[in-house]
Image (tube, rainbow, N blue to C red; front, side, top):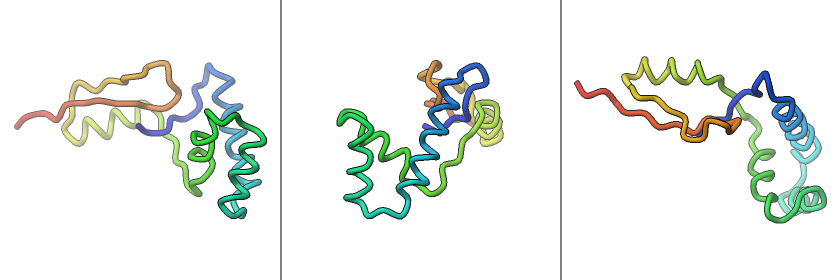
Length: 99
């Protein structure tokens, strides 16, 4: 799985990344327990882990599908497919070409 850039046709993707960036800025200097407390006030417990994972990295690179396909082709992969095509992130399977 690689994080995907916001899809041009989905305003929700842009809103999500703005929300994550904003929350990352607000919590980046907080101790672990405080960060969890802030997130728990905003998100329900079923989503808390996912949001904690999303805001915690200092670097969170986003990629376009065509970039990833190019890398895989250059590395000798074929049959490159997204396993969750409607998901904003790229869940990928591919087969290494036999030589």
